[in-house]
Image (cartoon, rainbow, N blue to C red; front, side, top):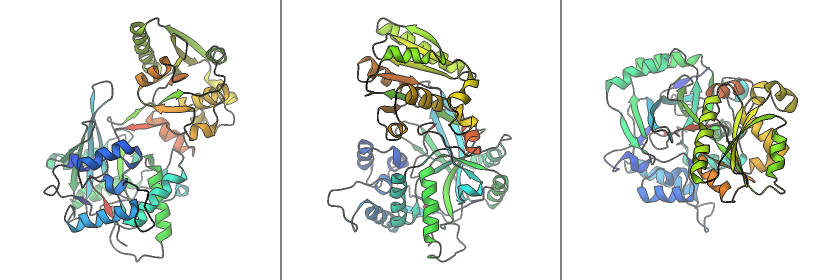
Length: 447
């Protein structure tokens, strides 16, 4: 069951900041040093100072990024930069975005509410990815210091009849949203909704639904850890903003705007790499289609044709695009017999897991044929994960990389099926697009 609750969120006061565009940021795990600097320069009140603050060589236990984050939060609340909503709300959150490399505009519809935390063992919430200790320790330190929730957890829920968005359309029609434009020029629209009737009906619609974590596994598990750590140390209150609840953005599996992008694999530094031998190994399991090229123009044509065939065959075949160093050709590798997966990957989880393209590629090709270990994949040694095929092609052609493997995206139904079976996907199996920005609303805990 998904028990959702309204809350009195803190939001940027528009008379105190120039524009919401200036103070929102990517999720913390997408912010590298360059992007951190970009957000620091954009506004003295950008949320990056709290979610991914700078570190310095002279940091101590009493003066570090987490302590400074708490200081910024307290000061911005005191100075009216953040203001708390007067009434408990749920927050409709829609994202209007352009699909990369297509020019097609879509809208992904969702809503933000508090979610009553439950362990995975309770069965109401399903993960689909494994987590690492480092990011969870980082987020736990931030939560301990600030006693607040900033980044969104992205959860999916089934709604084939579109009942939830049908209900929320009433609120969308009642007035214009707050709008923020991110660095990609995608629009993030927020409607605070305090109408008790809509909130009550939404709660009823969600109550019997099983939910699935799309993005934010580390944040969810951090919330569980903080809840367990603080139980018995805090007083129970009637507020919803407690350690028992976590701020979440919910999106329907059936929403037309839901998009997963593929994450491709670029291979380097494999000792004894032999392109011709790899091709012979591939022939044991795959039908190979060759798209040769002789110059830049014909290479671009072959690349475009490769992508077209991948997209065309994504629904019925396990097919990969491959470019190998020293080979003036793209290969389309199509799995010859799906029934052989059980024999080839007999030690791998469940049927739903074995039939993921990312599992077939990782286990059969990268590990068995190229000798890249699971630890290499986890630590991103020898394999670089990238969204842009063109960047990968340039790396192989220039000799900086040995191979590029191009995948089709994981389907939302596969996320649901693998998670329902109790399995966890390999890292970088899903790239939900666009990301949920941080800074539209935050939840300060009552302790």
